[in-house]
Image (cartoon, rainbow, N blue to C red; front, side):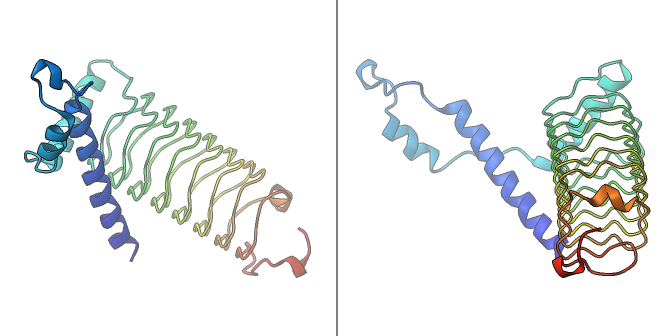
Length: 241
């Protein structure tokens, strides 16, 4: 079900982003009828029948190759890059800046992004199984449905990140900062949350079965309907931790 939703989301994103790019490159600054130019009405009529868009798969592959070449040449700034569905599995991109980059549905399995910046990046639906994100800055990143099982997120900064429905099974989150993060419906079974900051985090409906953590770290978190490490489902009548 999640896979189908991600495919639909990807298709919608593709259509909207490509259409907006096409429109922005062609939008006339004025209705220049007086100088014999094309009127805005004529332009809009033409825009209703656009020319074929470039192939997204080819563009993504090209972006990947450019990324790897530039990284090998010493470049580290890739803010806002479009890497939708890019295959970066096992690639070492430590120290790179991918802030606001589009990494939806990307293959990031066992990728190495140690000490990297992913501030505001979109990793929705990405496969990041076993990824190495130690000490990465991921403030406000969008990782809805992202698979981060067995990922290394030690000391990662995930303040305000959206991890709704994400899979963090057996992930290592020691001393990570998840303050104000959204983890609604996330799976954190057997995750290591020792020393993790969870101030104001939303863990509604999350599964924390067998997770390692200090109960006090959940004092300010929203735990409505969450499954606690001992297997019990939290509800207000159970009292505070």
